Image 1 (cartoon, rainbow, N blue to C red):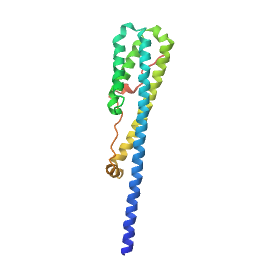
Image 2: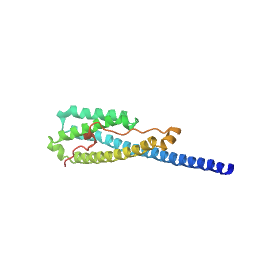
Image 3: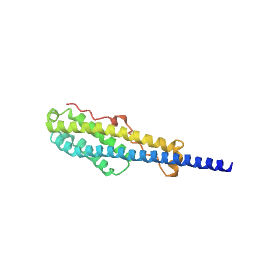
Image 4: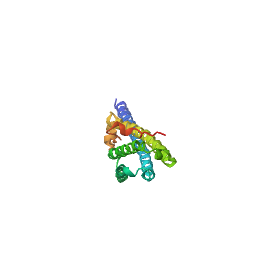
Length: 188
């Protein structure tokens, strides 16, 4: 009896050890996937920010009376750049406001047919539209990765391993206004 009891204890310890390793590895994998997804969102946000100065310069030539719109766009870009190293959850409202300013600018462009016809403007407009689409895709991927990690951190039995090794939930990249997740209307 003593010998079989010892085998049970060894078997149970092996099962617990194996489960711990399995869930630890899943948590590590998902934490890295969240980091990779965050990097993807960050790259797209930086791409958009890098296009804005050229867009503002191009538009400024035609829209002399719309200085307040251009200044608001530049201000939002500066705020976004200041938060570039912050977690995505903290940056989301600022990035959403930047998208809103871009939508407002493109709505005003409708009143300037010469600007709409400018090839440089059309190219910038196309690039920004493409980047906005990439931001949406990257944001969805990031939030999916966050969801997977958060489920593991909260659900049994992986939550026991998560607590043991100090894994925490990640923050979603959320938008207060659903329109902020849409690309600015780009008509060619």
